[in-house]
Image 1 (spheres, rainbow, N blue to C red):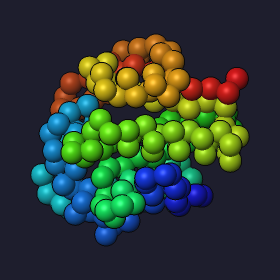
Image 2 (cartoon, rainbow, N blue to C red):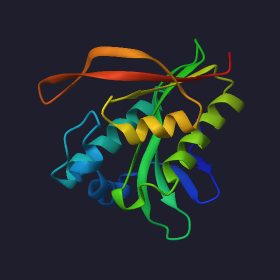
Image 3 (tube, rainbow, N blue to C red):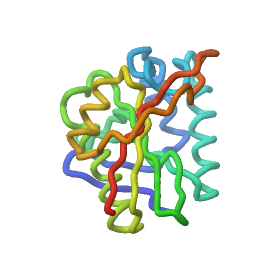
Image 4 (tube, rainbow, N blue to C red):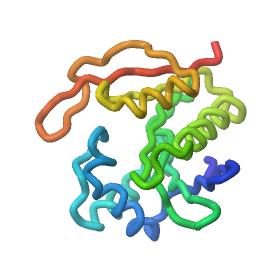
Length: 175
């Protein structure tokens, strides 16, 4: 399984427990977690538990999550990765988040583009999916910019805080 990807301005490195202070800072911002499928974190041990869960998934080749590191500063500015793989069907689902201070500067686009390119070129996957809260207009714009197309709405599919939300499914495909 790949553990690192490089872009012009970013290093995507498989998450490590030592990343927990920086990721906790990001995941404890209610504006960052507003459209995520987790509650806003309130303690660093939640970040450690999340990193360990994601590591377990990667050990089983079910998913992998990367810390997004700004090359110039060395700072962790977010995370991204493959939330799920289905190699038999040639598909993967991606996800991403970014510290608010880095929004609007093209970093999410750069990271997601790297994930998509790697999945299509190295793994020869045929389909990359992203599930997005319909209210998350910035994420929708990012996916549209990267030529993802709207495939449909998954009704009441994701539960957060006892509420089940709709999700929009976006797709990029080589077929």
